[in-house]
Picture 1 (tube, rainbow, N blue to C red):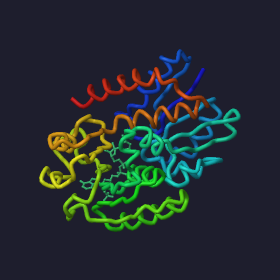
Picture 2: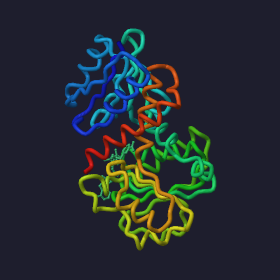
Picture 3: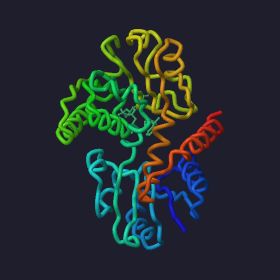
Picture 4: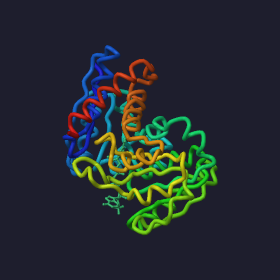
Length: 293
Ligand code: NAP
């Protein structure tokens, strides 16, 4: 039996069980995906116990994504660069623990081709400086994005993220131009081709919030995209305002979907067939709509 699960705290609202249970069902696999709520102090003891218990793989979420790295026997280049692990694969009956980061792959696989293809000529404004901003910046640099501007509220985080970007640029031999602004004193958006929100502003239940006002959004050139990593609700205040102004809008559902698909592919060491992806996405959407209303 395929034994999978997720470790984190809290896990009440995690959609990973829905995603992976649907995948196993559609692929007719005999398996289980369980939630394991772990306190930080329990992590080091729990990982060897999972390995002994025949678990094939785990997703890792807040607050363990960074601390779990030191418990791995091997880290993927993406996990090293992102400084975080969100997927563990147990190999050789648990004797070998491999740490991966599928948030970067998930972000990239969820990006529409029209946006991906234009990145080498794009200046993208990234709002926020947390864990997902790191994954987004890593993916954008990997894809050859011409310029990234970070808008953050804490200047110390901007400094840390800029030095992170330099490491990524060297690793992928890219020359992405980097700049930073305070989130609270953003200039006009006329120099950008797209915006990616990685802050939780607008996330359910605080759905009236938005990191940008419609007046600020209006200064973004026509044809630009506005991508909100939030998936609950599927259309945040930011995306509603952007859609009303005619911009191409994208929510975080596909990033969520593809980080999960990518993790499952690592556990199974095989690609997930295309035909099951749409029904899994639909199940996720149903689950999101059930919990965000
Ligand atoms: P995080 O590590 O806590 O980072 C959040 C960032 O937003 C931080 O830089 C924080 O600023 C900033 N921020 C928080 N509240 C703010 C406010 N009121 N005003 C201005 N800035 C604020 O969180 P994360 O893991 O990156 O997740 C962020 C969002 O992305 C969440 O909504 C999450 O659901 C979503 N997400 C989606 C996916 C997906 O698969 N679609 C994956 C990951 C995350 P400071 O640095 O100053 O604290």
